[in-house]
Length: 253
Image 1: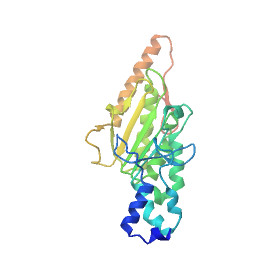
Image 2 (image 1 turned 60 degrees about the horizontal axis):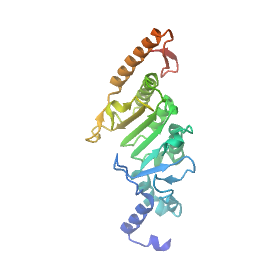
Image 3 (image 1 turned 180 degrees about the vertical axis):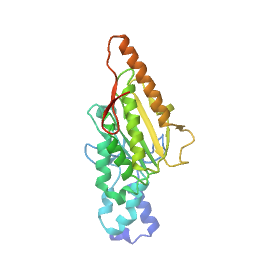
Image 4 (image 1 turned 90 degrees about the horizontal axis):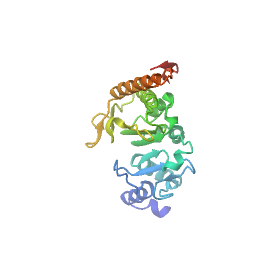
């Protein structure tokens, strides 16, 4: 350890970066990816079980002060299931994200620049989404991925999700005021009904990303829910589709 501390600072920082910055680069974002994975709480990637060595930061105050910003500001933290099998186990990326952010503390959380969170039905929690926006208030972008129910027209689920995430973003007064996506309108309604939204600071949208307007998507889903309700009535199902509004009350669409 003494030998490491006697090295020129430039060399020492290079060594720390090799230990603390992921070699797994996302094809989508171009960022080094780190997965604080739920099963063993280690810093892992898809390809390597334990590529990072954050324990180096515990050896002394000097290495901690030099390395902690490398760990948190140069990696994209991806907190959702790395494979489909884990999604089937009820993985809740939102609660896991909050546990991670609370655990590392406000100072370290403020160093994070890129965060991706995801999950299934557990993503429908306005208060938790709001807290996530508030905790990670220094982010450059926050990417949210959700898997809806496996059905042909899960529009009521998607309407509820978009309403909740819009309410969470507004209530948190986040600086991530622009929304974009790699897919048109931020959603794919077929199959698992994938939702992919990236919240970022003004002017930070990548050139190949598509702008998403939440109010237009919400209007689209409202219309789809009404059409779905009409079809149900034709079949004798005189049941209105309900959703839980952001104030916790059940309302009719």
